[in-house]
Length: 138
Length: 387
Image 1: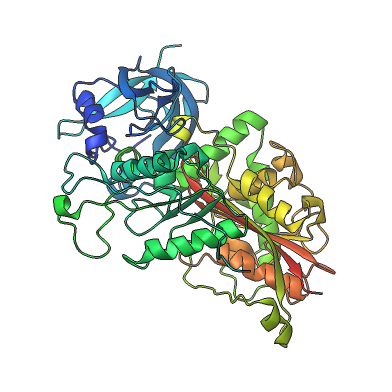
Image 2: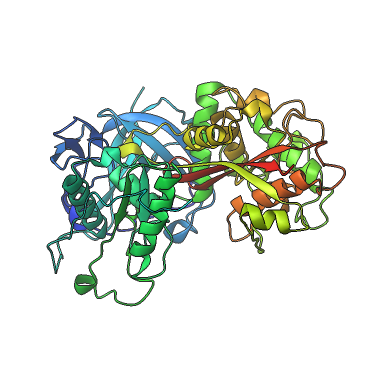
């Protein structure tokens, strides 16, 4: 288990991601949807990485998904240097895209690929919040 | 051969903005890229070569290729200041003339008026992924571990199978008096070493060392005039693999494309290769490369490495006979250079006698740079003993 609370460093907010990060401050998870080809995109950006159209709109995510892969890492850097072991994971949202995130509120030894998870938000103290995930009851 | 008349500028676009506080640098690159391909009557889907300078945010071209969703088989992120875009025209024309790509994109973007980042080296700002990955605690061993965990889940690969790769490297390293780690290890040693990022143990990870390496390439005429035995470059391929907007398969690398192109240019197949140098940042990096280069089927890497398959001189496919980055060295945290150097030794017959592959005629060297599970640059070369 982590030896302390997981850090929640504030992200650098750019013009092409401002709406996304503002929503996290309200504890809402948005995902971009391409009006051209229908791709649901992670991370948010200006251009669709599949069809290269720019007709992109945000939609509210259900905030639920499945663990696609995970690791218990002991080698945190930067803000994570002294936080102890923590779980880094790719969560496949029910809308499709995979999100690099953390699994929290769970014993790492009990986690497995395929497990259902839901989003929780950790406030950064700067008006934004990091979307992390915790197991859904089986 | 010359570039004369082989390549043509089909599209050109200048950004209309002079002060752009409401755009990220990545977005500016995207806007000019879209403008230029539109001017040509093409789309970004047609682009198979990408050229970026020091103003492009990210590791070389990886960040922008991911942001733009480019599927490129040729890239060049060389930088020499404001003149580099002219240099890139020459490089792109040479690549087109050689058939390495057919639609090359060169981009420039930045906003020093807005950010007052005017000093050299501060120009490019953070890459677009920086707001979404480091804040979650992304680190190098962890993203490689994600690929390993997924591979185990999908294909039943085991830690013991990954350990066989480290064992082979250590068997080779015992003969290299410069190697950082010369002790021969067992599968048990590897799987009982401390967990770094599960399922990767400490001995699944490469060493951290200082050092370096260099290569000299010459034309055929000079090669013939030299007393030194030269090694022929027979084929090359490269590719960027990235997150595909969140739809990536992290068990697959760009080696699928870079290997295909390198083998095709060389006119050989995996069965013809006598020796491989595979960038071994982690054991999983080697396993994925073996599969994606076509030395075994997808998912079969774990079985392929058993029974000393990678051990010189008599394994089915001897690899990294200097001990590789798992045991020998990893200068500047970049392992591609030394893989080529040991391949040259093998083809010259100058590897250590205990690990020299008999009659080594054809070698492949392959690098996986950047990060598994997110965005990586892959490059493959096929090298031959000069007859």
